[in-house]
Length: 96
Image 1 (cartoon, rainbow, N blue to C red):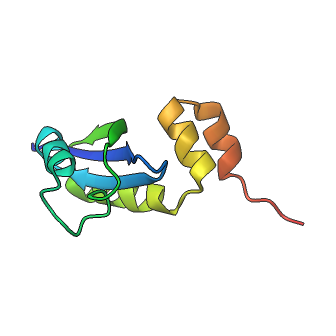
Image 2: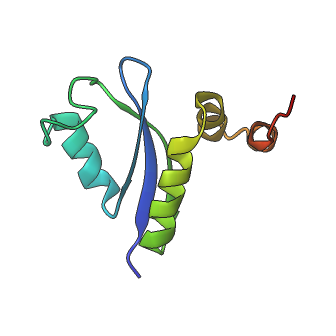
């Protein structure tokens, strides 16, 4: 079965770019070289790959990428840092 990857890049301006690909190495080359001139990252280089995870089902990878895109910056940072305890707390809803 073909592998898929969800990845997070940290851009030179401190922002995060989230993506999904079946060829992580090739996609990183595209990001670093500005292969797609209209891509979010093209004017935010240099880029650093700060997180990736591997999936065997592309539909699950796409769903996970969409989920991560909705997260607050603090939750993304916790994921990048492997701070899974904080992920749990950041996932809780706060009610007034």
